Image 1 (cartoon, chains in turn blue, cyan, brown):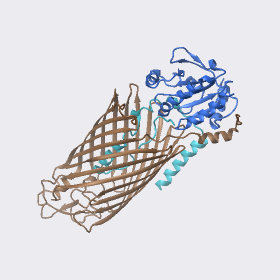
Image 2 (tube, each protein chain N blue to C red):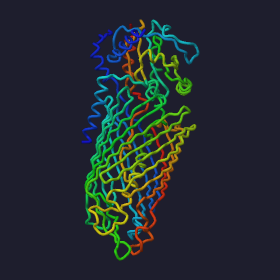
Image 3 (cartoon, chains in turn red, brown, cyan):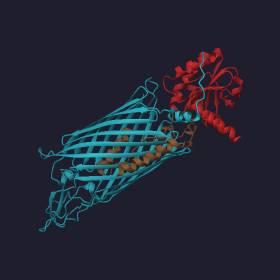
Image 4 (cartoon, each protein chain N blue to C red):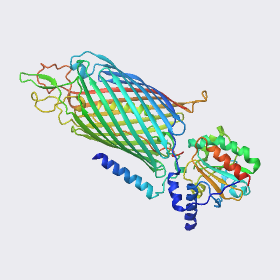
Length: 161
Length: 75
Length: 380
């Protein structure tokens, strides 16, 4: 069990170093969602998935949200989905913030940081892009004005697969 | 003499950060309290610099009143 | 056509990983403040305006304009026989920050002008985030040149050259606790005394005689401080600080303080207490036994042994900003501080002119001051 964790951490470390690489399956998980029903990553096999780890207390995360909503709306018809994983122990803070800035993509609550640890989240926000086969293809740490152009290019490439 | 000690100390810190990848014990997703504005070390620089000036004028001591760091660690 | 990149070797990966992550520039803001100091016969008030603007992702500039409008009938003025005077000091500063990866490089210049004193200081600094942004190390250096004049003597022209060396470390200790350590060394040379003050020595015929002070031409001081800030579970903070200062004039000083901050809805309230104590400089005496009894002689009250107690309360109100789309956040702030200074050796000569008998038995001097700061801050 420990060996698997260290191997996964090592693979994720290399993923961080070289943001684009091949064949590392995205670890699966199941979390409660804001909509009510629990959501599992497996439900999205066959689609391109972009997981965004965010928190209401994180400035760049909040700035990024409207852009993520636009990406979700634009590419959903092509078999893409955005998933927002909120990392806060108190999910009411996220729900309250989303009232003012609502989004249409699923928001999941990682209140015990299990998925954050699984994905070795090393910066806020963190974004992982997963292809239709369920492999992690790109990792972004942080968000700056202009990063959305990279997201666009990467999503466009993956939906065409 | 003092500068040499300071630089040695800083060099040691930088060397440590480069060769021994120390695992951060507070993860980026655990920084909700540190990111709270009330936890800022120097939230109002215009006020803290004014008060430092008042104390420096009235008292004999000066220095080491600095700020910086903590926060959300976002990017 | 999708291009897949090969998984790099581990060594190369770790090397790149170290350089991968970048920091963020500080928030853009503007602060407009009115400050007022009133106590010990002196009132000083004026504005302070600060603006920070970012340019792109890497550059941040901060500018500050500050004025002290001084009206002084302080103990030093009264005892010297001078009448109340008014003075205006203007200070302008500009600093530039350049962010590259995890490092921020800073350059700044401060200029201060009043009719008998001009000061200019250049500063360089570098700040580095490390250990997963848990640690921030800052190094700083300043070089300053002051030109000292005297309104009593137009030919009087002296200089002070000053250098500061700073080292700071801020460390995240736990999810709820921050530690900041600071070290600073200041070295000055030149005319280090106040041209308007005097020392006194015993007159063998009774009373005392005034004479000019003689200060050393150099002074090196070092200060080390620590601050610990803790987040309380009901959403409040408590902060404690301590600073030790020592210099080549023999002045050793301890500063300790505690502050409690409590948010309440749109309000944030704070209460603080600060205690400061120093011993006298080794060439200080309130009354010297005879003329030229020492190489260096000072009676300047800031070189006397003294202690100060400061109590502060602050209230900050975060007002709604929906009326302005360019504003992210705005606060209105009121800080009220009460400072009490007791001198251990410096005596109050206001009712004891040179002819008064029994010099050295006058009451010790003390002063109380009220400090008000009112400022509005905008984040955009």
